[in-house]
Image 1 (cartoon, rainbow, N blue to C red):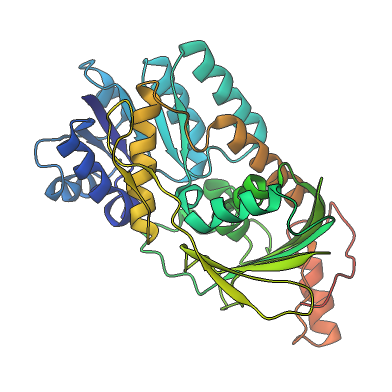
Image 2 (image 1 turned 180 degrees about the vertical axis):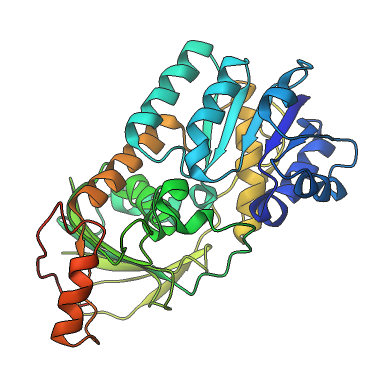
Length: 370
């Protein structure tokens, strides 16, 4: 069993990771031995899931007994780089909540450190286990839609995560806003479908040292181009739409076992997906599971992690892939222009543009209508 440390004991661990970790303990894959948080009260609260785990306020203290082989990092993103380096130097495998780091350079540094330590470095991206994503990737690769492809990826809803601090809303601690939060998932999905994307243009609504609540990014890939539209404060027509000369596809990220497809001028048809992944730790992966919700995907990504550490398969998202997506996000921030607020008067719009966080680095430009 892999002696495991959980670093950062906030809502994301309790809401998404505690249950799959308990299942892995029952399978003999991990043994959660220490809960690390600057606030010992938060760490102690997580002991309802892991009653035998000790509590520590620093990773250094957690690693001192020498019984930790896997470190799961679920802190604010600004701490991911330093904690991952410390864990790798101590000889631990690392599973890090997304994003792996706040810059592509930091992510590449972590890849080199993992290679030097001969340890697995993986990033939590449960959407890699969406059955419809795998099915659509196979369909695109077969050429059924033709090329070039166009896509629009929208993901927006009022922010509703349980939070313990304001770290997610300050650029110094979060590294970014909705683009680094929802966007890293969307861009990773597009990377899995189309390959490496290149940012052509970007717009957001961040002011001063805060983070963006709304973001639009225009991308180009080897097979086409499109737009990602993200929001923390409004519900959008969520999902991924892809169109090629031979047909089009619609995917709803809340209905992960189906997608819709139609030929040019035809009617939409719904397709169910039964793609599955190993759900046990046996070498052959005898038991397989089709996930039906986000929590099922969380179970499978933890199974995938332990199987990767045992040399049975590769991580769904490793540091190299994570760095590639972070490079796109970094370019989007570098190119950021003020995202127009059409409800403002012209004078209000001018005042807002002057306060945009990137105003001194790039001149405002027009952009497509929202």
